[in-house]
Length: 510
Image (cartoon, rainbow, N blue to C red; front, side, top):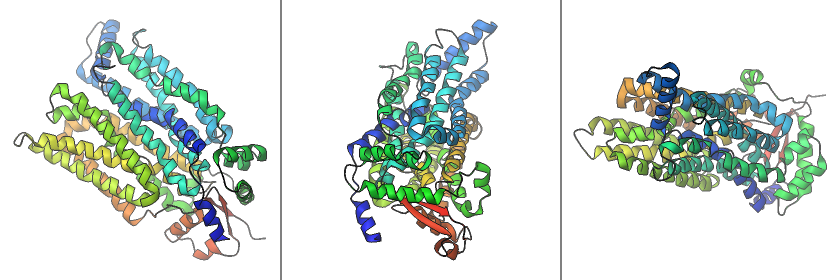
């Protein structure tokens, strides 16, 4: 029977509806995250000038440069505070409204945030820019966790990695679009910066029009809502061929196995010794993902190129070139993950980023004596971005789903999301001051973090490609000091399969 199951799983192909829902949910959500990360880079001087003018109008004195730097840093990093707020809401929202329902309802936040940023100059109010960034941050915080969760639940096991990285391609695409639109020939002029910030409403409008027509996660419909008719309809939509009845039976078996398990709170997740190393793993990869220096590169690309000695008129084109490389690297990661697995993408990505961070420090220190070193530093910036997009950009969100069973997953996403956004905020706010204090040596800190995460992955993180949750739990069992007989005998643990997702359900011995 196991061989038959494996044969069935291999037959699951990528259907048009699966691909459409993956692109649509990522287009109106994940892409906006990337866009908002990079959009404040190009009009930085115009936003600072706007703050300067409005503060002078109100207080009749010119604010000093330090205050403007602080205000701009808040504008950049308040997005991450919003993101952390959104991440805290995820568990409650997906349980109440479902995965797709949460994505559709959260679009309202983008319309509010986009309107505030778009009309800020008209009302001469800097607070509207900062509030708008916060509200769009809340949307990104919700979607950054919900999109991988939704795609993971509708994907067959053999496509889970591919579909799980579709959002990360859209993050890279969002960064690229923000860089292209920020060119001085397009919207990079002083009069256009509010429009540049407010453009986020258009992809969201497309998502709001089309996504409601797609089905909810079949797993949510059956296990949490008990709606068998809607589950059958959703599975027929997402699967072109194959035995839908077998999948429904697997889900019903999982539903029975979960009847004695309630969703764990964040506190109980952190205290549960059975998943200690899984929790440590998501903490390391999510903090490492943001403290690898990638946000510093994204937020302050133009400044980095300016310091590297690139002529001022050429900087914006160099930045757009890096954006194109992000998209290519993201696609490379997406199309190779099912072939090479998760580990090589994480380890290779972080090692390559670490080498490039050290390269930036060396090249910037010597560019005065050796002129071509300025081009090496630009090469290293491109290397950091490519290394990030090929693996560390998307794999942490994917393995957060894969390392935890159903009862632990919402809290795991809350923990991962909060740490991710907290690190994002820290680096966005601290980096300008860190760069002032340490100069090019600040990249050595990022280098150490990248190598640290890579070493952790080499020794601790197992390969989860094509594995069920039971197999992944068994990999961690010896590390978590769970006796192997508890995992395999006496009917203590029961395995169920749904779309290739294994679930571990604890059953009391009668």
